[in-house]
Image (cartoon, rainbow, N blue to C red; front, top):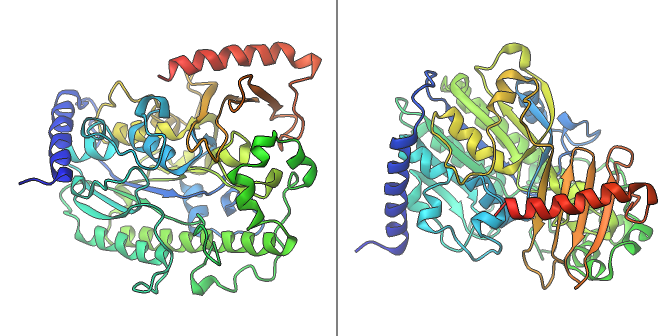
Length: 460
């Protein structure tokens, strides 16, 4: 008798196969590339060498950015692990995929339209390593190679003294060595780093090899990491989980230095494993046939506004890195930077595009391939996006908003009458000045209110 997971997987694969066979694009004559999808956890967009960070060492990611295309305005549509990861898999806003907590899993029918299911049905060898992050039912049988884990996982355990990041690197090498060279593969590796080990005595424990790294540097204090900016938050945000976690990580200068240094160390440890994976692809003569995508599920507050973690539409929380390396793209595009607004929901349609598999109509993202191959301007591209965070309302205030190319509109939903914030990110990159009461910005405020209501309906 089939287990529940096996039944779900069988149904999903049959549905995905039927969809793929009917919709696969035949026009793309390029041989199907391998796909390597690397997702960090809680990695800010600005905390890597290629982003200009003066301290954090990420030589392997820097090399990828120099070879590929870097998207400098990559955002998540909901800044929390489970919801964002569901959006990455499904190419959909939370309002459409319906996963707004840590318990809800993909239904078989919904999973059938995710990029791993569609690629497997199209003949790809699929692997998953690391933090799956969506629901309580792990779809192990839905992959050819499974080394995923539920929940947060642990950097160290009694049975596993090796750091989790290094173990995941080893698992990736095992997958690469075991693949059938006659078929393309898609490996999704979701690092826990640099996410906290919530509640541990040392919440960001690095690999012992990195324990002394950055010990001699003093991490810069964020400009808005002051009592003044904390006081500007609504009372319910001051009393939220974000400040509770700040109290145990950033409440004193000593705590802030220790936390930030460990955060940096976890990033460098992850970069080392990415380098090992790239070396393995090169040694097996597969690097030239592999599209590499590197991103994060959300950003992270390093003490800004008296907050830790993410969740809210402020830049530190929603802005994440994105690098895509296409070895077949024109050489002159290597190292290009794209300033268009791109989203976590764009990753799934991009992968499917490269695999010559049509994206389902239910996907709301757009393929980034035209940007990568042309590195120019796409005239029909988005100029703003809808943001939503409705998860864990008892400890995280619910909010929505709009992020345009210039402005951020935040709408707190915790009160019967909404509380609003408005920022001009061009003139005020640290979002220090709330313009809601500014007379000269009332037209823009009203425009974004209407745009919020319009996008809110569209994303359903």
